[in-house]
Amino acid sequence: MRAYQDMVFSTAARLTGNESCAEDIAQDAFVKAYENFSHLRSSPTAGGWLKTVTTNLALNYLTRHRKRWRLLSEFNAPTEDDAQPELQFPLPDTLLADLDQEQRRSVIDQALKRLPDHQRVPLVLYHFEELSYEEIAARLHVSLAKVKTDIRRARMALLPMLESRGIAP
Amino acid sequence: MNELPEKSDPLEQLLDRTLRPLPLRRAPPALQSRVLEELQRRAVLPWWRRSFAHWPSAARAGFVLVCLVLVGVVFLGGGWAAAAVQSLHASGALSPSSARQALAIMTVAAELATLFARAVPSAWIYAGLGAGAVLYAALFGLGAAAYRTLYLSPAKGR
Image (cartoon, chains in turn yellow, purple):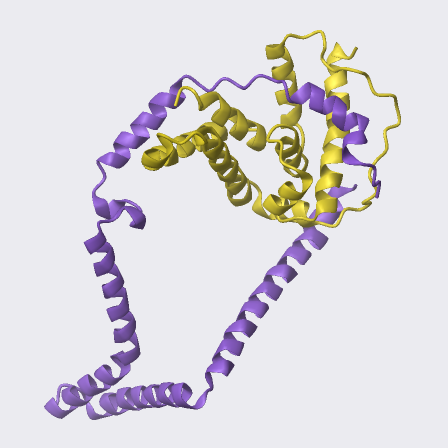
């Protein structure tokens, strides 16, 4: 459990944006792992199994407990303008370059928390869980175009948050 | 919609470089003890308070059997109840008017159920179930549309 607890907690915390819920989800994930211990003990893919279970638990939590109606309508609502927003300024080469890894993680986690669920969840699935757009669309039961638009908007929202920390290059 | 190839998006590349190498968040120190406490709590639960998948095989089989019996009782209960009312009436335990009313209701219900089972083709039953599901979905959709139109739109202002 020690080998995987940070990974499980990180996955849940980034998806839900809430530490206490992430702790509950991590607990559930490890209880499930214990129930399947006989299969996982010798499995080389135990880490992947735990990550998948944690992701599913977090998505279930978001669907079930967190503003169910709002989440559904946000995930499925046709966007007012589906055209992807364009950058109006040049991009820096790096972000948060003058911070150490731990400080950078903290700043980014705070910024992620400020994103709405329907933007944070696909962004985290793409950039942290390394799912493809198609896989995210299938997991969230939304269209591919919606996933791309939400991720693009999440990036656009995240960028000024990270730069406004005064740490932009 | 912008159809640029995904990996040519400089913003995506920038965030990829920023986010992917991030260290994991440290799990709370209490997580391990919480998990162990939960496992201990579950271990001492009697079997009937665990999830169905963890019941003993005999208990699961018994539960399924009881459910089947209950379903049978529900379907056959009308006839049994009518017979019971008749016997009560015959023994004088029920007043004639109460017995007549109870018998009439049960007879009508039983006959309707029999007629329904015999007369309605199974395709109609499936179609009815399908129509019910469609109506349920339509009601859900109407509710969601009303929620979004009446509640979300004015406040959203986007």
